[in-house]
Image (cartoon, rainbow, N blue to C red):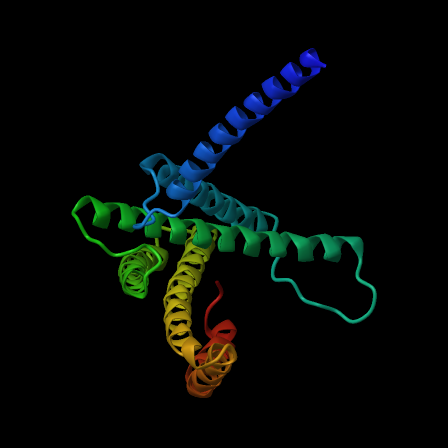
Length: 242
C-alpha cells in the first residue's frame, strides 16, 4: 500500500511539472502570436517575398508556354467538352491561381515589412489597425502604379516581342489584383471598427450596420463600374491583344 501511494505521488509530481512547462510554453506562444505591433521576423518576410517571386515566375512561365504553344484564349462551348478543351480550361485556371497567389504573398510581405519598419522607428501603430491598413494600401498602390507604368513602357517598346508583351501584361494584371486586395483589406478593417462601435446597442447592431454599409458601397461602386470600367473592358479585345 505504501509503495502504491509512492507511485501515485511521483506520478502527480511529474504531471504537475508537465503542466507547468506546458503552461509556460503556451503563455509564451500566445504572447508571440498577439504581439502588440504584429511585427513578423525579417526571415518570415523574406520567405513570403520569396514565395511571391516564385508564383510570379510561374505566372510568367505559364503565359510563355501558352504563347509558345499558340493555345489562344479559352472559349466555353455548349455540350460535352473534349479532353483537350477541358485541360485547356484548367491550364488557364492555374494561371489565375498563380497570379492571385503572387498578389496575396506580395500583399502580406509588404504589410509585414511596413509594420517591421514602423516598429523599428518607434511607431506605435498596430499592424491590424485601420490607420496602418490604409497606409499599407497607399504605399502598395504607389509602388504598384510605378511598376505598372514602367512595365507598360517596356511592353510598348518595339524591341520586345509578342510573347514578352503577354508576360509583362500578366504581371501588370497581377499588380492590379494586388491593389484591389490592399484596399479591400483597408475597407474591411474600417467596416469592422464602425460595426464594433455599435455593439453596445445590441448584438444585432454590428450585423445590420455591416449590411447597410455594404449596400451603400454597392450603390456607389457598381453604377460607376458599369458606366465607365465595364465599357472599356468590353472594348479592349477589339483594340488590343493582351
